[in-house]
Image (cartoon, rainbow, N blue to C red; front, side, top):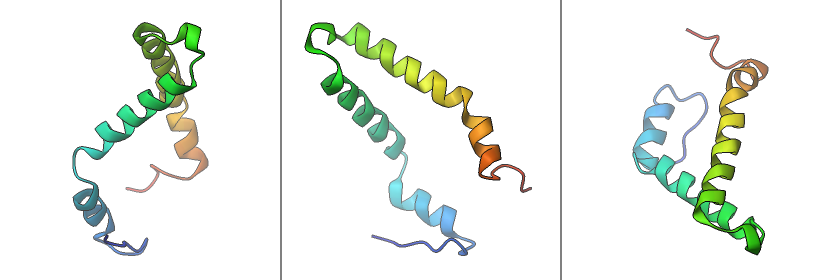
Length: 77
């Protein structure tokens, strides 16, 4: 496994190469699986899980700018 230093100018490129294009897909599928397992058994069905995942993703996206601002991300050009 490659290790990238935070001061490496090619660090982002190395991380992208290491994770590849399927990493986000895999992480989303993992979150769906966790949601399925955590739902109460009587509520566990594809529609309920989809609604819960959408709720969580919408909340995370709504907070994205505020979170980025809090960490000072996005101001660099």
